[in-house]
View 1 (cartoon, rainbow, N blue to C red):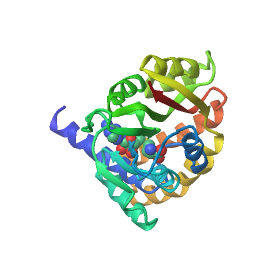
View 2 (view 1 turned 45 degrees about the horizontal axis):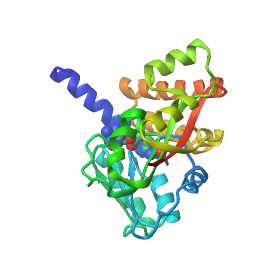
View 3 (view 1 turned 90 degrees about the vertical axis):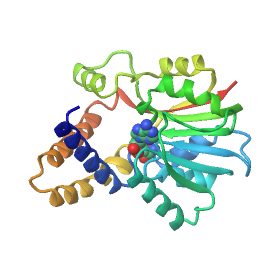
View 4 (view 1 turned 135 degrees about the vertical axis):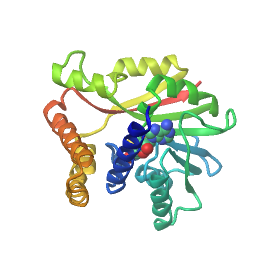
Amino acid sequence: MNNENKSIHEFDLNLICEYFSNVERQGPGSPEVTIKALSYIENLTDASRIIDLGCGTGYQTMVLGQHAPGLITGIDLFSVFIDLFNTNAKKLNLQDKVKGVVGSMEELSFQEKELDLIWAEGSIYNIGFERGLKEWKRFLKPGGYVAVSEASWFTDKRPTEINDFWQEEYPGIDTIPNKVTQMQNAGYIPVASFILPENCWTEHFFDLQIPAQEAFLKKHKGNKAAEDFVVRQQYENQLYYKYKEYYGYVFYIGKKI
Ligand code: SAH
């Protein structure tokens, strides 16, 4: 990458981080869904070690902190998100139980068999579903759990427009039975999988972006990269309303054998 491209790339990343810092969460989800996924996980105690990978500003981590025993570490690549994460933990008086640190899900430095639970809502796609499940397993105790949400197809066939969009966005998207098989092949018992309800996309994700988009465009008036980014977000949101029968987010919960 030459210097010019690199600086454009970094500039775009800063914009993306700024945009998503101003919304409640950085992917589809809801407190109810986090609590439902947590209900499948057994044997957690006050001594349990839990990590939340790709935690963003930590909306779901705070829900975990309020409903699960144990100590929770949120990990995200971007310090802007982690700073907000730790501010949110303090606001909720969770700072002794929930801590955010900057790091990559691709380079974890935990001991083997140290963890009781690995959580990742709307973020495992960054490493890839199969690769993440395989690489993270060694850090889990036998009988430990993984709980991840991931974009998935609901049908075997789908219209070209949405198929092409996702092939470009995330070629790892697959049907629910295929994802469950991948989880089993990675060495987990597939304990549960369930589709996230529509309000995880609408009420908890898209609706909150509308005022954030207005403020963002006002602040970056005339900035083509910022305008293009918002147009892309709006297009993604429209595609969801048009094709939501064909895809969505699915939670997958697995137990290490
Ligand atoms: N779990 C949050 C955020 C999901 S968005 C929620 O549900 O709201 C995906 C997150 O993954 C972003 O915050 C992004 O910064 C983070 N991310 C991307 N690549 C990463 C990596 N290699 N390691 C850790 N986090 C990463």
